[in-house]
Length: 304
Image (tube, rainbow, N blue to C red; front, side, top):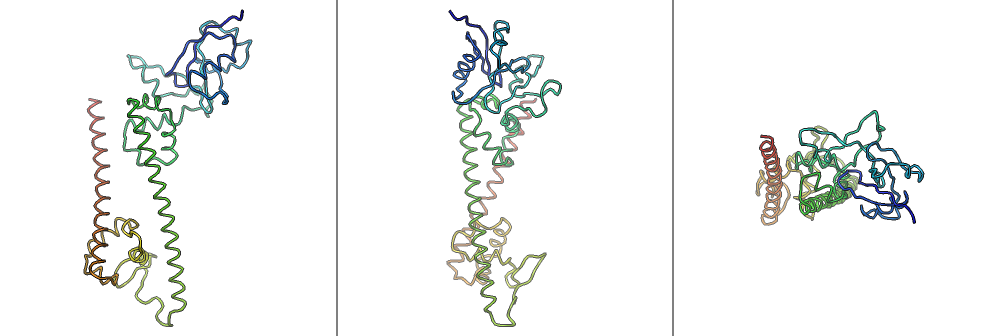
């Protein structure tokens, strides 16, 4: 009969731990992978939980004491020493895995999403400043472990990951819209250049001047590109900067009629759309500021 060796196994965050009785190192890897939900086709590394020593030899495995605690590392996961905290606050160890220069190579690090989770825990509005790669890292993080790191219930962590995915989708839509706008502007510039080549001599550059290297229509005071966007066919208000929207709304219907050469109805519709877009952007800014203020207030209450 094969002798089974009692031992313990945990994942790299030490949040999950299981007791096993296995006859070999291969069985330890197989059983541990099943407990942690790892794919059987992907390799795992076994290390000693207390010091990170790699266990890759059956004879060495059998020589270890009974009830030795191992750690299973999956893909890019790396061993890190547990943070020792006195005074009844040892639970903080699961939120922060620190590196010790004398025992761990400087290239080793905890899972990237742990640091990002700490940023969110301190200030939820930091989502706005995160890169697409950071957001994707949080979306791909294990939901249960992310919930534990943030101090959330599982459902709330799932809602957060769905929200982050929507932010990524919206950024992608904005990026595609920007690319389409750039293509449109290039085509418009090409058409303008062709018209200038065929225009009568002596009229080239009439009514235009440059201010700080930007071409401005002297009659209207708008940048040439802004006028091209305003006279476009598809939702020009979404393609203007906030400053340009404010300038359009401030000018009013009559002034914009003369600038665009449109009738009153069409010009009024454009101004209403610009005003609605400007109001929406200002509301978004106010909402972000409100979230930041509430978060700071909650943090100060918790600390007090």
